[in-house]
Amino acid sequence: MFFLNRFTLTLKRILELSPNIPTKMKRKSLVSSLVLLIVSFVIIHVYGESFHDRKVSNGNHHETIRRLQSLKASLTRHDSIASTPFSSLSPSPSSQPSEGMNNPRVYHVTSYGADPTGNSDSTEAILAAIADAANVQSEGHLMEGINNLGGAQINLEGGNYLIRRSLTLPVSGVGNLMIHGGTLKASDDFPIDGYIIDLSSTSSNESGSYNFEYITLKDLLLDSNFRGGGISVINSLRTNIDNCYITHFTTNGILVQSGHETYIRNSFLGQHITAGGDRTERNFSGTAINLQGNDNAVTDVVIFSAQIGIMVTGQANIFSGVHCYNKATGFGGTGIYLKLPGLTQTRIVNSYMDYTSIVAEDPVQLHISSSFFLGDANIVLKSMTGVLNGVTIVDNMFSGSDQGVEIVHLDKSNSPFHQIDQVIVDRNIARGMNIKATVAKMSMQGNGTLWNVDFNNVLLFPNLIKNVQYSLSSTGGSFPSHAIRNVSDNRVVIETNEVVTAIVFVAVDQSMVN
Image (cartoon, rainbow, N blue to C red; front, side, top):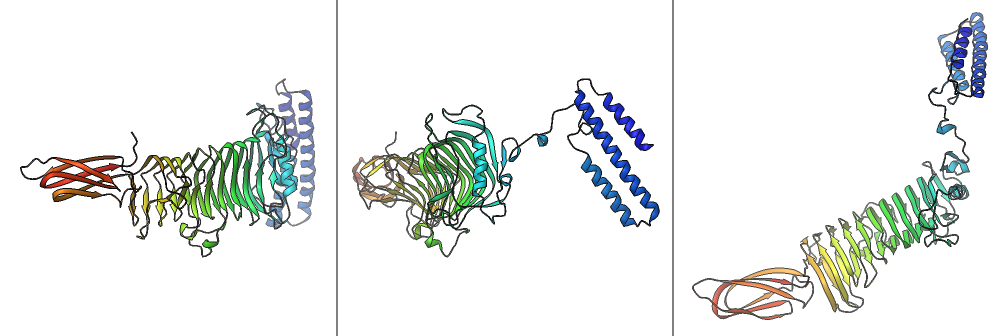
């Protein structure tokens, strides 16, 4: 009787539904409810008869109830009309059809056969997922010739995947795509000159000048297995590399060629997994980040092992919050190497050079400020053709080991600097290292007619004082005449017309910036 009453109530509820509900849907609901009622009645009837024929323990009773509940749950679908709010008849996202993915535009690589344990090769499976994502119907254009994929995602699902060749996009001219959420490791036969993720053109993009736009690589661990590099970005626009850990590379952790605006942030790069003080540090090789393009940014990035932390051969790049403790300069390493003589246009701010120096060849428009240099790390301005123009090195901290290392050093091994203009080195502080600056002040007290003030210990350039300001304060009742007699070799000579006891204050400037 209980089941008959329940069926009657269910039937009445369905018949009272809004007339807007299609007849087909009402019929489907009636059939589903009837089947569920009949099956439940039969099962309970059978179990009920058996209860009287045998002794049921507490354990058997609970097991029986659990099975009944499981059966009921399996017969009740979340997308049935009986379990769906009557105010909404649209299907839930989980009930929408999909091919090789759980949600629209989210491609789960395990659906293509990728092995998340890393025991077997997953290259073709991941490439198939990428190909499906890259070939969906375009949502319009970004830059001319770049199809908008609508934010399609390649989801690695937190797995570890072994790959034998580079993961590439099957066509150029696409954008708005993300690859995220897992680990990719190069196999033992991976090409030694390859990259785990290679954003280079595999086909011509005749209608546009860029290969890709707005590609995001996020939450990835890339293990190159000492078989090449991590990520290659070639002639692409607005690429994001975010929260990535790239290790065991032999060439470059990240290579950027041409294009514009590759943003590398919140990431960790190291050829060897170490936290400093590694006994094999002298053998570190490779380059963590190689920027051969313009207008890129590296922010909040740690480089913990490589011969060169960041190599720069493009202009108008900015580095902020970068911590380099790759191979120490004392072992032949370099933190940041600016290798674009004559057109540097680089800004390095709020960074931490940890036993690794910054080297700039013939720098033109270089700004370094608010950074910390530890372990005799310093800034080396290297002459290639003797050009030094528009350089500001200000408000930095240096800490060394009292070995006489200069905070800013002029490397004139190739040629002396002879085109020097608008160079400001000022307001830096040092402990255990020698201060060098283009602006200096000194005072001298004595009795006589000549005051020879020597600035060689402080001034950066050997003979380039362009501006002098001084004052002479004498004691006694005399009013001597005085004048600057000589300014050469970083010395300022002041002479009075009579012997006086006085204090001379002198300020000099080599920068000549108005």
